Each structure stands twice: as C-alpha cells, then as structure tokens.
Image 1 (tube, rainbow, N blue to C red):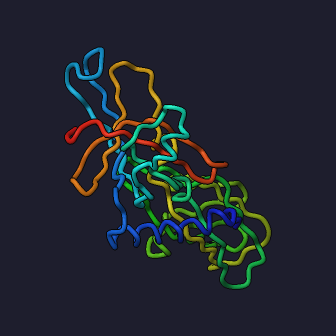
Image 2: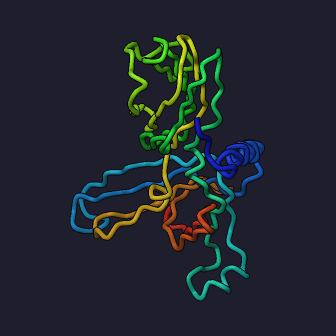
Length: 243
C-alpha cells in the first residue's frame, strides 16, 4: 500500500516535539482554539451568539511579533501583535508503509487523504488491518489493529472505500486466506481552512483563543501567510479577555 511523502512521514515527529516543548512550559503563548461566532442579528454583537470551536493541537510556536517584523509589514502589523508560526494542520492526516504477513503475492494500494474529524478532536490514530478471508476473492478490515473486524466479506475485485477513514483500497494479484495487510495512520482534527475561516457575513466574527503569562484572551486575525504549502503563519491581535 502506498505511503505519503517524506514530508508527511517526518512532520508527525516534529509535531510531537512541539507538544513536549509546550508541556515543559517553554511557550510564551499557547494558541488553543479557533472560534467562529455567529450572531442571530444582522451584525456582530447583535442578538444571541452561537460558537463553533475548533481546538488547535499541537501547540504551535507563538510569540510577540518583533519590531523588525512590524516595521517590515507596511503598516499591517502593530507592536504587540502575536505571531503563531509553523502551523501544519495537514500533517495530522497521513498513513505509513504496508506490512504484509504470510505468502500471498497480491498487492494493495491506498488512495486519498484521511478524513477530517469533528471540530474539537485534534487527532485520531488508527491501525488498519486488511485480512483475506477467502483465497483470492474476499477480505474484511479492522480499524483497531485486528481486535474487531467489519464482519462482512468484501470482494477484492473492485476498489473499496473505507468510509470511516476516507481512504480507498484497491487490490491486484493473488491472495491466500489469512493474509493480512497492516498500515498505521492518523486522521486530521482540522484543516487549513478551519485554522483560517473566511466569511463575508456581517453577523460572523472569527476569534482565536490563546493563553499567555496574564491568562486567557481572544484575538482577531490580522494576516495569514503560506510558506510553499509547507506551513502557515498567523498574525493575531488582542481584542478582549472574555469571549
């Protein structure tokens, strides 16, 4: 089964290092969530607010923008704005190399990108096991490493979509009963679009919840940069201490 790029295989380790860095208390600020707030009235602040919250994990690098960055921004940034950098949301959705057992010579491939989960779930690890149940013709699959299976035989003759993780399996060649094909992966808790929601509605506002030395506070987005599709940088401005 096909693997992702070297970038996708390396970045999970980098994200783990970011988590440890945060747990040791080295972050000046912690970006915790993106809040999309919709007001029942025609404009922001009118009526009743309803929030959709997307938690951010791992803790990305966040600090006060330097005076040099402010000066070079052409008036976009102000002193005191916060820079959140090296955001790599897509890395949460990846999968690795296949591990095969027994003597079948058949091959399997995976296509697609794992599903994005519900807002608030940062990441979900899964272990996909494909087990041949009838020589050459059918299989079953497990998402918990082989503890439980889907329970129904599926033909290897046509591509099969594993809806729970959003990936398609395609088979070719000769298989023997009890052959297994194992691959590990994770599903994303959010996408770049959720990190940077865009809206033109007058009754919607986008807030970023952070925690710093003086406690929790909320920001608005000032600027969002993309660096060769490798990571993203958000510049935020404090707006309030409460939502």
